[in-house]
Image (cartoon, rainbow, N blue to C red; front, side, top):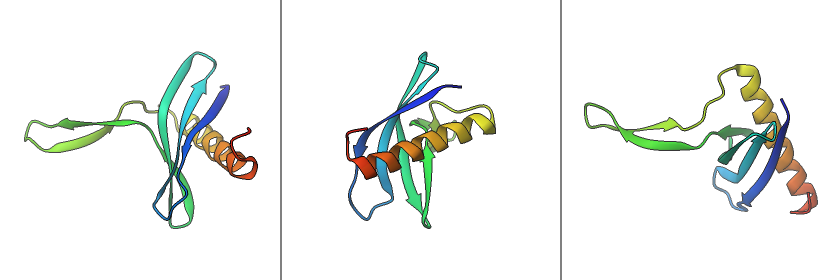
Length: 94
């Protein structure tokens, strides 16, 4: 799987969210607004999500896009983290 990542927005603050990225897969599919956040010193990603209301009227969140396999999720995760770290080293000239 060929993955290309564009870091779209970086936050320089003490909050958990560090950046948003677009992920391009095999030059065929793009996932917009993948969130990169830090928790307990580790970097994680979340896929774009939407709110919905279940049959009991409770508001919930669900991913709009979700990798089916753990290996696909790891490849996307690693690519986003790598692009973010490159962005931090080089500024926005990646």
